[in-house]
Image 1 (cartoon, helix red, strand yellow):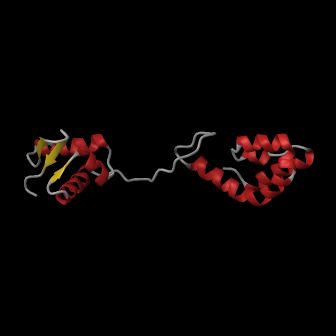
Image 2: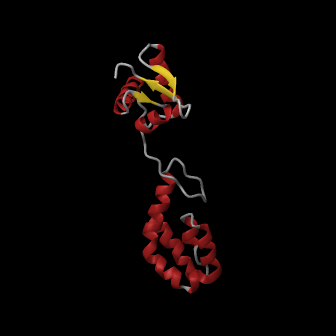
Image 3: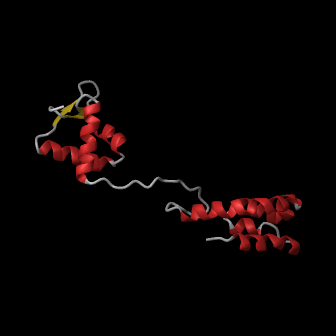
Length: 151
């Protein structure tokens, strides 16, 4: 975790003729290099950074705490989704099929439950093996459709 105090100390390096070290510290390599080569954008950028350092440090720390962080790469925020139990997934699939007139495809199941394709397909196949679901192909598209005859 980066600290604001360290970033401000690195900011002071401009008085030694080295600008932009605080930007390198916070993972901003391109602008750090620009600040280094131009004396902190001729001192103007360095002064503006006095106000920007807290957000710069916070942003860097958020990126670092992300599970998808790769140095030098933009990060993607992924919501944390709790994995459904088999029973919960089956119940959500039945409700989704009910909302669609008793029929559902794997893709529709993925959209409605948030589970991944193999999980949804396995759950629907399990329901089919138990006799709760009929498997058909859509006449127009050829997509596999799971039909709940009781709905």
